[in-house]
Length: 180
Image (cartoon, rainbow, N blue to C red; front, side, top):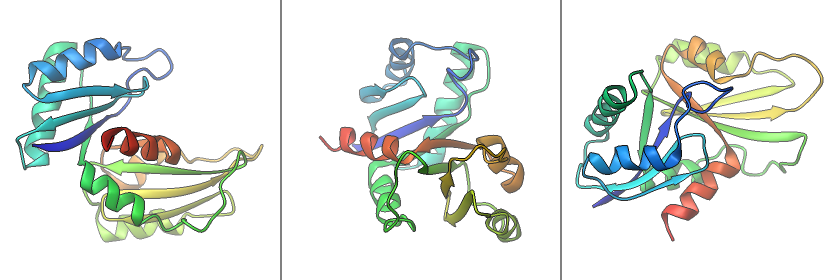
């Protein structure tokens, strides 16, 4: 069995696509995966599966969610060993984070084309700094009063792939939960 996390995009945000975590857990259990556990309302689902192909697993989850909920829910699936590698590769490890300086991790559905990666990283500025490693975007974000385009939609438009974003502390908490 491989331990995975499915990161769902766009549920329980601003009153849209509301789903209770208990219902989400039931949906995953109906797919015959084991040890299903959810973490906070933003759509983080831990589970064990025999599947070694995360792409096939992701398509199965997306299809089941659409059939059950009646709407599309993009899903990014990573094994816990991939999450561990993502945490270790953090290019901002030496930066001290606080209330004014946050780190976000955007999980991508696939690796974007090189020219699109370059376009996003070149849009880094004094508020948001983007680093892309494989299928993830690490964003160091300075909170200010100024308006800034950084959002999940911004990243998706720049890279032309589905994405879902989590705060860095959520990524680490989910990893800790998965490895208990």
